[in-house]
Image: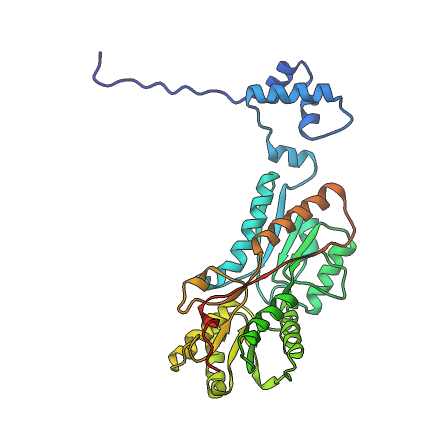
Length: 354
């Protein structure tokens, strides 16, 4: 026997539609009707075909199925273009995309990620005209005229779509959102209940509905506590860590008159915390601080950051589920769903020096 042993690779051919038809005693056309869910079809025949497919470990070609149905088999997910992705900017999108991806995978749909730059002309309907997608999920939409125009076209033409984390209160657009008014109010009430009264607010741009709702929650909490709104304690960033750093310079001169700060997201809160630390002020010692989103980094910074937990993963999953339902059932009623949020307290709000 030779020192070298000859290894023979055995290739097991994949079962075909013809093999399933022969095993089940039906035509190939009947096998196609079963896997494309074409009715009418006798249940006995359907079960015989499925049993034969299991025995032969046959898996239909999902791409071919999509072409047969006149579908792309893809759901488009539109996200704002992020030119320089950093760990601080990925949590919100990654959680939503993970939820979308999980739901689509379970129902054998593909995810087509579409980046949109700020100055790009919006034309969501074109995605359907070109048959690139069967439905779309839109993240980071803004309340601006061009966005409203394109969303109105989607809705009027009954295309399957859903917005995530953005609500147009005067429009019938489909959306999945969270209870941001309640979450913001409870965040500020946490500070008030600890004795903090002069509470600054760092919000994002009001072209986003969640910015508007966070402002409402902040104001409602103060009003309920009998505290007059002081606009001088309100600051606007753009939801980035850098904007938090920049606001720290503006806030530092009046920090002696501030007990606590509510930031509309964790990225701005962390930037603010870092900027004030460079100026000699420590969160949890010189002022209390609470963020929003409850991203992974809340437990990685020092002191750990109190925040409001938003179920982004579940929001993405439900959005995908709804879009797929629209595709299969031609559902046309307006869908608007809100998910609950929860305040998570950590060290940044636990020390009271007022």
